[in-house]
Amino acid sequence: MDAFVSRKKRRLSQSRAEASAGPSEASCISNPDSSGEDSTDIKIAILLSLFPNLKQENLLDILVSCDGSVEAASSLLSSQDSTSPTPFKKRAAPSSTLGVQTSLSPHILTKAKDGSLTTLSETFIRRKPLSTKKGQTLHLYSPGDIAAYTPCTIIHNFLPPEEANVLLVELLDESKHFSRYEFQLFNRTVQSPHSASVYVSTPEEYRQQTSEYTYGGTYRSNVREATPQLRSISRKVQRVVNEEIQKRIREVYPDGKKLKYQSPKEWRPNAAFVNCYDGPAESVGYHSDELTYLGPHPVIGSLSLGVEREFRVRRVIPRDDEEDAGEIATEEKQSPPSKAINEQKSSSRVRADLQGQISIHLPHNSLLIMHAEMQEEWKHAIVPAQTISPHPISGNRRINITYRWYRDTLHPRYTPRCLCGQHAILRCAQRKQETRGRYMWMCYAGYQPGKEGCSFFRWAEFDDDGNPVWTHKQNEEDVAPALANFAASQ
Image 1 (tube, rainbow, N blue to C red):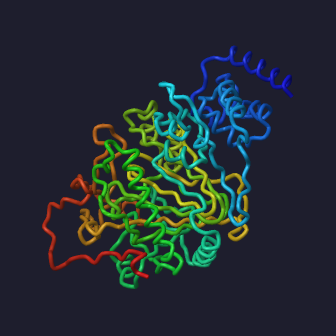
Image 2 (image 1 turned 120 degrees about the vertical axis):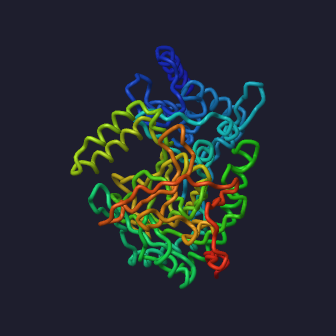
Image 3 (image 1 turned 60 degrees about the vertical axis):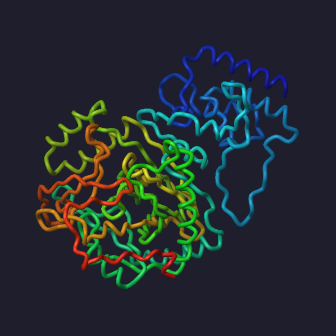
């Protein structure tokens, strides 16, 4: 065995000497490209031959920490192996809990520039954000990596297994009543590629949701009252989300302070969108969630149940900075209406391809928290899958609950109406560098089937806590009722 290892190390040294500059962190966990550098699969295969007792995913973590250098990873693992009497001891997972991929990064020490020893998880946090490569997808699995490189936190095995299964069964039964919302795109009416329903607490709130609140400029008829389990787990969701918000403020945000426009109040879920993805083809394209009632820098708690799917995120690059932005815009304008939808999809793919994307795997019973910078600076999607592994309860279906906090100050009785009489929606400017980060009220009627939009546009003004600064005086006698907190409405 020693001779075999020596031969492997000699081969490794030769191949590294012949290779060009080492790969970035992105290439370590991306699809291999044509740069001539060994692919990730080859590197992992070499490490597996040297350390056959370690799992492939754990070796991937080490490879990433060593900037893609197999030689450095091998040296680190060898030194760890020689100093630990029982290195990398495998622990059996509890039989009642579905296994998830974990990271060795919190358990392995690395040497910092000053000579001190630090854990890999601390090293991840100190690193600069990943620069994803053109046309590549980075697959992140461990919670530490996801928190370090994206505006998200993931918690695996969030609920006790039996409680998660009961909730899944309850919502699978509810999904019989879900519907696909329709919207207008380039004079064509299209349906969402998955089904969904909105959930609130009381019959009065049901009335408000169907007659006052709009989504994408239209009223929703498919609104339902929160189920017993949906209410029950909201207490834990609320507690954990608030803990993670404070943790991110302390450890990630500048000077340990909340972001501008982020609410300092406790996050309280008072509405939920429940989505059903029935089979691998059902999906949702890249988007940012509508801010009309959430306000600036919202936080969303998203609980996944059933089949595991990929949640992909990518940074929003202003068109000013994109290499082909001018060409994309020109092509969109010149395309005939019959080709407009395909052109839009194509341009979206081109923009995503320019920067690459990050994939976060969402197994059953995992809570993903999208933090305050997510909707303004990133877009997210659930992409179609080639194949999926059926879940023992849900089969090919995935249920997703997105708990949201609608701000009292953004009730539709207060928000502006556009020139055509429709409710204006709130969006964040993302495309141009000079206006990036500003909020705007605009007409969205053009996306409603059979309607045309108007030219209404107004910049939105907010105080530092994200409360709107209205230019008109509100009628004190017409105070809008606040939506009830799910946890408090039991």
